[in-house]
Image (tube, rainbow, N blue to C red):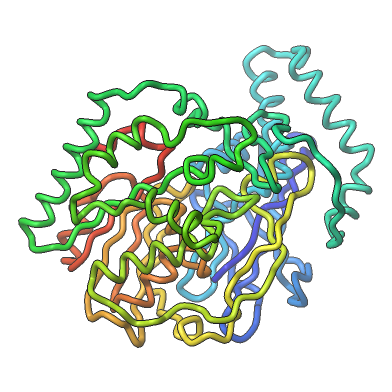
Length: 438
């Protein structure tokens, strides 16, 4: 598996300097990647540096782009900066802490090109903000290496500056906004037409699979506040009416996995938290509950789950939105020495795409529990299978062959090519207002 990021960007006359790192992590140790490439431009040189990452020297890179035009192309996917190790290729993303700097460089260039000057008030404000950061750059660089954590009292209901995340009870963070307008969905009445369209789509998927003798399963993973509304900062009627309506119509069907009931029961009956505190994704316990259900659907009763958990401090996709730095939580995760963890499948295909959508990952298990093939159409709940908090990690070990396609649609070309025995379609509650085409 390759880890890495573009973590520095700066304007240099008319050019843009980028640097960052990438490191390949294998079963035994980490090593530098074999090469860095800039997909879409063969005329731009990438130099490798001796930057040390976690005790592995030679992991750094530097590239000079001719202009902010290339930076914009890289930011929005027309170009891709990749790290390669053997057959594995990983598209490097911008570190979220430099995202604002990247956008400032692009904005300044566009304003100058379109208007011939840079006197826009918004641009002046952006420059002032950048100047303030530059004045304490030495501090930000040093504090980035600090591993200690401190505690403060924060008012319940406090929100991030962009009002996308709020703080609930016991330190649980909840998504409020974002591109899907999460909280607006909780205030909407039930839309019978939208419910009907989703039910018809899911039934059509079942009919398509049944005609080909494929076992089909539909998963809709609820939002955190729909499962543990007791921890939300204000009283909340949950889940959303759209999710509730779909579940009401389909909960009795064998092809519909009632994720809401499974995760709510885990919390109420089992006393375990299904979600992470500072992340929008599932905890180990939430993942295990869904995997147990999937195993029961395919007739497996093997006890493959971790017996020893240990505590790790980890950040998350919500905890990074509050300030320059990160909120972390003490997260229970499996120890590395358990049997299933050691039986890593072979990654036989990886086609990463910028922005996640379209990514294809495929694995072959060495000692599968089922001599069958599973085809998954889903999102970050399955992810790229890098650890046991991602559903793909489990299914790539359970099935002889597993392919994950980051897509909201059931794509027939993958079905025809792979001829799977099982198809899983998965989405999350906040994506429901957008109906897939297939």
